[in-house]
Image: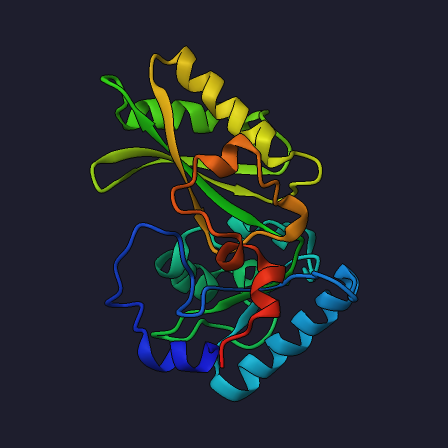
Length: 239
């Protein structure tokens, strides 16, 4: 996958709103069952070496696979994105990759390879006469961990097809359960005179996080556990 991305995606021409440093931007190894986070970190280190050896794309290790404390957080690795990192790696030895380099690939950038707990990508749309992007940003500021909010929650307020949205990554759903996140966004929305509308799940959730009767699940249109719960998908693999 990393090799195909490097071949097909030219970051000097790619445009988008999501932060990225590479064509294959981030490759996490996530323990589900029968494996530990530490073992996933070993796999991540091995994969990073292979990505450099095979495709000449340098690698930064993050979270449980990080080789340095200043690279544990993905946001720190991504600082400046492809354009900024391309210049920084050239002039600052502290920003050079863990494997390969010292400069990033001219069109494919670099990959962040790591090991982490299951991340749930969950968004909530905001509705109401005052539901502009500023309300979504204010809600995101209040709930994200970096602003003193909820542990393991990363959040930003964005505009999606003309609608305001609180876009979140829940990095530890054991400590901060999904119903708690949903309830917080609901309450903050009311405080700002707007309403939390339907939810959106990007990718899959683990069975541990799935509660059939939970309100946050009911507010995701067309939610199908056979499609959206990881273990259910694994029982029915594609041909």
